[in-house]
Length: 280
Image 1 (cartoon, rainbow, N blue to C red):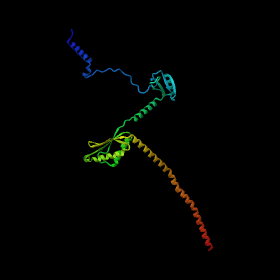
Image 2 (image 1 turned 135 degrees about the horizontal axis):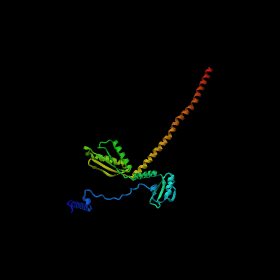
Image 3 (image 1 turned 45 degrees about the vertical axis):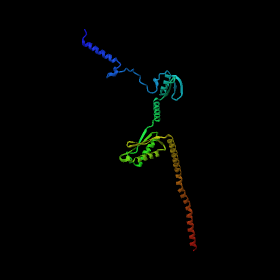
């Protein structure tokens, strides 16, 4: 005899099993089934070193950067241990793999340094914003500082957006903003080109400069030549300074040499006067 409660429980369990096996269960159920993920081995970072090298024979380069040839991995590890260094797999794709005896810590540092230098070289250009104050009322000296900052950004290879804000009744005098933008174009045309001409966006007038590589290279060459000429003229002035100091000393020596004849003349004149008095 089957009890009613047990039959109801079994039917509910069967319904839950059927719902869980249906494809729409994951979409309709508030708690979806966990997918089974096969455990994966942790990805090894960096090259294989010492005992992690799986190949039985390798092509060895010693710590003096000399090619030893194909040797057993155990023999290569013994050489590295005797030298107090590590056996590092530097080319795993070749057959047999190429390994070197070196200091692994120093090797990692050099790799990180090269990667950092490559990232610095491949750095993308950014858009720098230079604001000409909060309104049209800005001192000419402050404008010059901002233009120099824009020049620095352009020489570094970045684009520059010049922003001029207008406040209150300054919106009536937009021609003054256009004149200021034209002055900035005249001052930066030796290294940049106007990518976006001046335009109004609400109470802001904006303009975008892009670096001009041929002009920048010519500007850098010209500046290097000017710096070389200044250094040369400074060296020449330093070499001429001792000669200028020697000239007064030479004159002084000449005057010292001219003094004794004057003294002798005075003595001679005194002697002649004494002889004249004696004759009298």
